[in-house]
Amino acid sequence: MASKDSSFDIVSKVDMSEVDNAVNQTEKEISQRFDLKGTNSKVERSGDDLIVTADDDFKLKNVVDILQTKLTKRSVSLKAFEYGKIEHSLGGKVKQAIKIKQGINKDEAKQITTLIKDSKIKVQASIQGDTVRVTGKNRDDLQAVIQALRAADLPINMEFTNYR
Image (tube, rainbow, N blue to C red; front, side, top):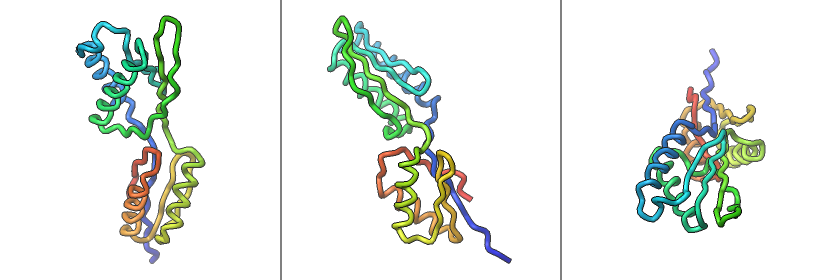
């Protein structure tokens, strides 16, 4: 009788309801903070993007800091966000788009599989769309792969799901 292989998936997903909650909390704090009250500072979500607008660069930086704090408190990884450049518009206002990255792209998936192969742990990693599946005969090996990936501190948001 053949032994059953164990596996898990490496995914990069962001809980959008938690992002919405963090945006709402940020908006509430902006309306209450003395240095931002009465300014045109705001954060809004449109699809997979967050748009932060403010009166000047300093206020924009403060709003982004508040947003990051709220996201961290809600267990949303900051690695899942790609910050665009700050755009200056008429009237001195500034705007920054923040893209929410969902899924693992091919280059990141190749980087993950290479890291797993270089670790010499007896597992197989395969790219399946925007996820990476890791299979192995020994569950301890799978745990070792998870620890190695966490220690590598890759620039992407990784979650380990479907552990069987």
